[in-house]
Figure 1 (cartoon, rainbow, N blue to C red):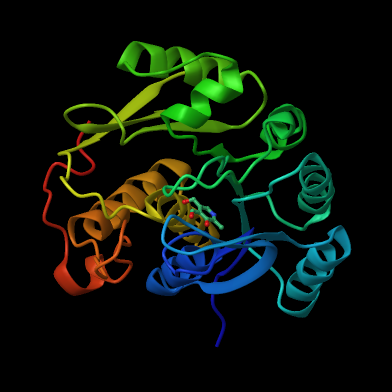
Figure 2 (figure 1 turned 120 degrees about the vertical axis):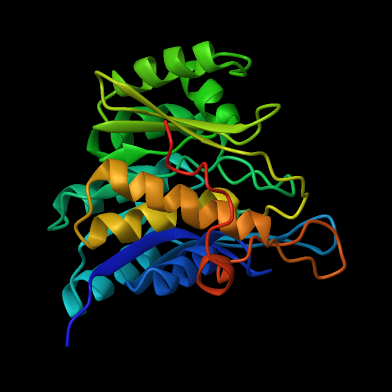
Length: 274
Ligand code: PXL
């Protein structure tokens, strides 16, 4: 037997909701064989502040080649990359990997406030990674940071941000408007057309891992051969269910529920409508 394969290059989120943990749970839920090259260990949040530990370039590269030489890969996703050095290494690795599906999630700040990318590394992210990406998946804050604006908060501003980000070279830009007032509107742009994906806003604070899981689901669907637009629609459906059935473990911000779509199906019928 064989299976579609996806590799995530990202940080370990020790509490289990985001980062590598979210990616691998999501890959499994989408029937994709998951592999991971860990860039850092994130063990800081408002409840337990133990710090962030960055892996060496050698450690990251060793994991990458172990995965792609031993198993092979159909799609790659990147999440927390932290520094210019790591971004430059990852750009080299992605460029030389035998794939043409690369999902770049420009992770900057965790839901619990951790700084997961140095400010000075944003430029390298734009220059080195955006041109390689099949799709980038910034939220409103990340989109604003990458285009040097103080904020992106309206649909029109999302469209302008998508256009500008597209000019850096990714084939598709998905600007995620989950932080907008009212509905959760995401905009997919391919350089020509906008597709608007809208779901009702879910009222919960337990959304740690939502961004990671959304882009991991997109990666998994691309690995299986879906088109970018269907991968995004399926990703949105997956993450919406995960947020609707979010998990609270009693302290602080809880986790998106990666098993939600499997266990409870799709509740929000507006998913996928334009
Ligand atoms: O949700 C963003 C995120 C990404 N990657 C890692 C994280 C977090 C948030 O906590 O820890 C490793």
